Amino acid sequence: MRYEELSDEPCSITRALVLLGDRWTLLILKTAFAGIRRFNGFQGVLGISRSRLLDRLDRLVAHGILVKRTPESGGAHEEYRLTEKGHEVYPILMALRDWGDAHLAPDGPPIHYLHDGCGGEARVHLRCDGCAAELTARDITLQAGPGFPVPS
Amino acid sequence: MRYEELSDEPCSITRALVLLGDRWTLLILKTAFAGIRRFNGFQGVLGISRSRLLDRLDRLVAHGILVKRTPESGGAHEEYRLTEKGHEVYPILMALRDWGDAHLAPDGPPIHYLHDGCGGEARVHLRCDGCAAELTARDITLQAGPGFPVPS
Image 1 (cartoon, rainbow over the protein chains, first blue to last red):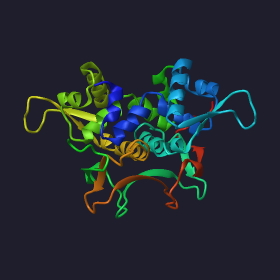
Image 2 (spheres, rainbow over the protein chains, first blue to last red; image 1 turned 30 degrees about the vertical axis):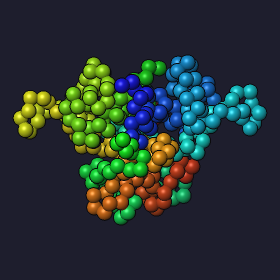
Image 3 (cartoon, rainbow over the protein chains, first blue to last red; image 1 turned 120 degrees about the vertical axis):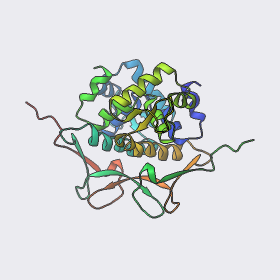
Image 4 (cartoon, rainbow over the protein chains, first blue to last red; image 1 turned 90 degrees about the vertical axis):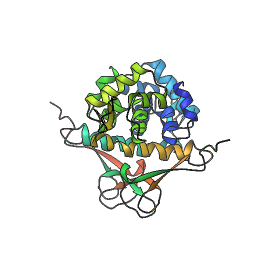
């Protein structure tokens, strides 16, 4: 099986990973959330090769995660902006952050992500939509949903 | 800058991605959460090359995310099991699942993740630890934390 063929798997984790889960794509999106918009900006922050960056940006645009447009200020360089679909990637990055803070930050969190409203720390919680209990993998059972292929 | 050097960045998202964010690692962990424990099991489910799989498993063991051990049943094949650090990767996978369900599952979710206790659906929420408000990227301000390098 080729890696890309995994996107046919009846699993939303796998499908999301085939699209977002290479070494650079989520880093590029993290950089977009940090306010970087121009090609040279991404290149400078990440040190990624130009051809690789162009490939990833093109793919994110093709999938409607970024949109490429002329800046409103009328500048010469086109900008890459997060779409709403792109904005919804944020909890994935915050879940990575929580895990990194817990396991890869021996001196404490390098960065706090604070709620503008009250200054509290933003954290990811896996919760039950029914009873609001906080869940871990051990509390969960899988069941086929409407998108699971019916055996023919 | 080489990709691996990014793990020195004062950013827990970046550090987590350098460790987990290649094309295969989170897929391997997803497969471990699905109960696969043996090398051939991972290989069969994912169709990954044996050398690449061994490389990724070794790295996950070296970082304490999986542990390699002889099965309690006394079988001949060693097993790879999630450690507690590995178990804590689950919200990352669930955040990917939520995004995949929303954007890559036109026929509805392929799989439901249900709370054993009440049958409700497990979902990731980004919330404020102060006031419990549900947050998006637009509600958050970044601030240097204790792990941010002090300029010398």
